[in-house]
Length: 317
Ligand SMILES: NC(=O)c1ccc[n+]([C@@H]2O[C@H](COP(=O)([O-])OP(=O)(O)OC[C@H]3O[C@@H](n4cnc5c(N)ncnc54)[C@H](OP(=O)(O)O)[C@@H]3O)[C@@H](O)[C@H]2O)c1
Image 1 (cartoon, rainbow, N blue to C red):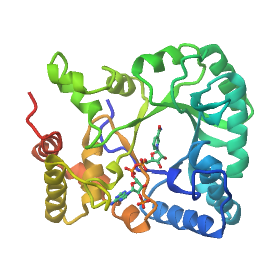
Image 2 (image 1 turned 90 degrees about the vertical axis):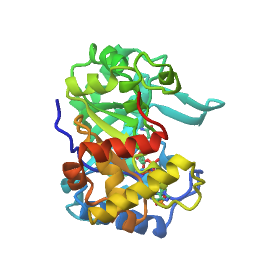
Image 3 (image 1 turned 90 degrees about the horizontal axis):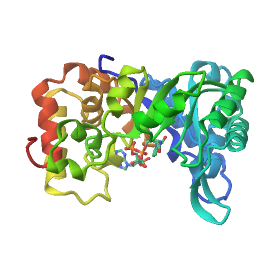
């Protein structure tokens, strides 16, 4: 079993300007450069993308920064995702993990990122129409061409990973899921087995265990809970959320750190070795995440359970 303390990953979904098809300008490139600097400043090595983020513009502005920063590409790791199609074939959203789609989308990402390879390719969501043989053929080709170094998935259960893995020649090394003190299904499902309250949570049993047992890194998106516990202006908090925000602030003051580091430290304390994907584009908020691994290392069992019970708003069974 992994021993807690994953690594922080930076999530690039906020870069590149609007989600529509309009183009980006110097301001969006400068923002990406500042964010990359801030993230590297707190030790981030891996940057998370997807072909669809901001209609390709998240990758494109990142590629512009790579092109103008000599030596940067060799000093970071990049992952991108494919498998979701937005606004195509008369549909708002559909999934496509066909061989042609995987090849076409990865080539598009490489072009926008202005790089020859990604360190990791994630299959963004399970596509009910996917054929594992086709996925294996596409991934095998991309790896043989040197365009993809490792493969991962996102939003998949342990059973779905095993189903794909059976046909693949390369190991699936990561699974990216929404996991946080706000979206707690992954941890609630461990204690609510055979409990009526468990019906309120949606997380396939055994997924965390499958990932740990098979060396699949758990990457947690939404790890800052979109700022819900740490001062996001728009959030109207429930009583439990408000109490949890207070608790995070108290613990942060006691530990001489920030609420963001305590929030992420809570995830990283879990022995699965969860790697939080942090998506804020605010450099000061990125900096506020710097102590997360240290907080995890020093977090007591009582503090960890105290935060969990506070966020759920009632006791565990
Ligand atoms: N695999 C998937 O299906 C999937 C789905 C969603 C996301 N992701 C990945 O995960 C990354 C993180 O996801 P996320 O952005 O939803 O999660 P997050 O890191 O929990 O939230 C960051 C978002 O919350 C906003 N925010 C507002 N106030 C904040 C505060 N006080 N503290 C922190 N954030 C605040 C940020 O805005 P500012 O930028 O203004 O700070 C930003 O838009 C994405 O960038 C993407 O790479 C993956």
